[in-house]
Image (cartoon, rainbow, N blue to C red; front, side):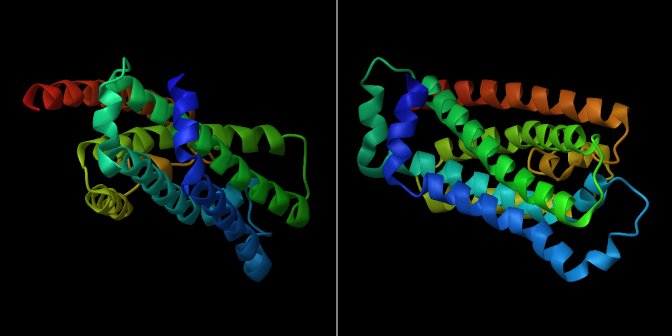
Length: 240
């Protein structure tokens, strides 16, 4: 019920176009890169997927996180406008259910976002590389991994947005977190566990142990952020 309600709420906003446009812009990045500088990549000794991800993923993931932050801020902006959230609290629906409904919708749109980008990478693979049957499972693993690692940033953005009534405050905090993440060295495991830094990690070229560690870290962070949001809502309700 909460998920369907959230879908109806964002229907008349720019939420869906934001994700679709963001996905298409990010998908164009590897296509333009290959169109202009294909000679720099075609001779490299690595799998085609790894070559494309190494060359383009940092920019693509930056666009992904910015879109997720903007989407999260927009979802709570419509709740705080004209005190809509206060009226929702009078209904027999807990605020935590609203949060998790929004998180589910944000997760679905993140899937759409990454599917569009996967199509862009697939076009590059088809057009510029000699393909084998191993390419497509590798591509799916890379984007499945990327999907999991973007969830902590998505839930973290939602928690920030839920705590700030002014959308520009939550958007500013989110953007600061994103650009702080870009300054952190990706090779430092401890610093790369920052939720907004996780999406910059790649499956391609990573060891099995590294992949497993990041998957466990992402799941733990999602659970911690979810628990922190429930606690935040209870504390805020106690002081209202």
